[in-house]
Length: 560
Image 1 (cartoon, one colour):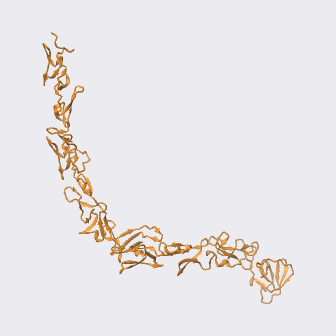
Image 2 (tube, helix red, strand yellow):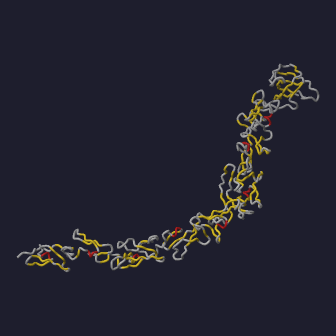
Image 3 (tube, one colour):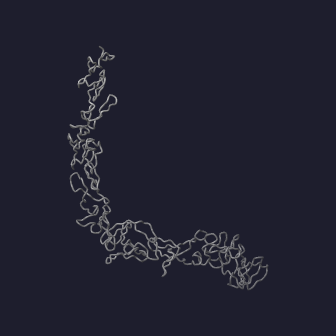
């Protein structure tokens, strides 16, 4: 009877069983699979696999090395290290009887350990092969792929598969005094970080002792036997602090070495002038010569020479001290501090880069405000715009006073009192020369060092455009040629006769007297009782006796 299902392709019991009187009897063996259902079309409980490619022969227990995923046709999700359909073999890259050991590039435990079937990778932990550890605990990851706690570094190239030595440096990274590489520690060798080395020779795994010749808590103090800082300083974690006082001397280090207090101090100063203080650009301390103990005498570089006491005093071998200069050759120097042996500031009342300029004790202004303070001392101003000053040395100090011939209240701008009151008056701005038709037209040489606006240094010259620079003509001539008569410019008690309007002829001149030849002259009548000399117009043919005239020769009017 028709008790067994027949598929469309004619197969009975889906090909997974035999037809019996009571229906399909499904296969239930490891060869044909474990099936169930009226037509034997499903896997029996506890098994999975497709009806064709994978008959229901795979246990859903996944060999107790994974978990079953029932979605779709079902599959095993294997634990770490295992693989296969039912987790029955080691996954790719894993090895050992229990698949506990990770491989990398064919190297068991990444080349940094051995594989134990029950424990997994047993990582190396020594100073030759490195201190390694698994990346995870238990069976999660066994590969010796990282450094054990407190060690570094993992090789950076390939990380897991390189057999390079690594993980050698201890937990403080070379004891805090070096850098770690794949072959061990490279210890610090500098004045700031110290001079260190390893107490063990194996792979330089430490930086825990000072290199030869160094000592102190940070191994950055120079050591000669048991003496630190060469006996001329104090050692601390920052290194040597060299002695620097009058009692101990001033010590320092060679320019290419760490601070070791092995020689006299070498200092570099700013060249900026601050107040009366000028610091040398370079200084060595020494005794009788540069860099020779007791390291107290400051030497300053000057060209190719070194100047004892900065060139500002003399070294005293008995006192071991610079005696600062107080003269016009080296300057007038002093110490800025009793404990500082450098002649670095000016004595009271002195200033300038060489302390050779006397300064006002109240204002502090050097050169009496009338000069420039230079390295050689005061250079007093000398020009019409500033006044004509000269250096004067007196018990009151060095001052700029008026040059010879100049005087106050002119601010040293008036020479020879402006050549007398008949030519001009002296003011604080200089000579204010007369420039009028009565007194004359006067000035000085026409350049910036003699004139400025209406003022000039003297009244020795005619103003431009005028001639006749003498007491008679008074620089009055501008349109005619003026020449001074030879002989006296004053004619007294000689008879004069007016030959024409404005012309005077001398007459009855005694033999050998003034003006032996009769001359035709222009004149200005002189009346001593008048403050000025007004010009008088006299009638022709009038005779004058007992008068004084100031006369000038009229061009082309001479008569024999």
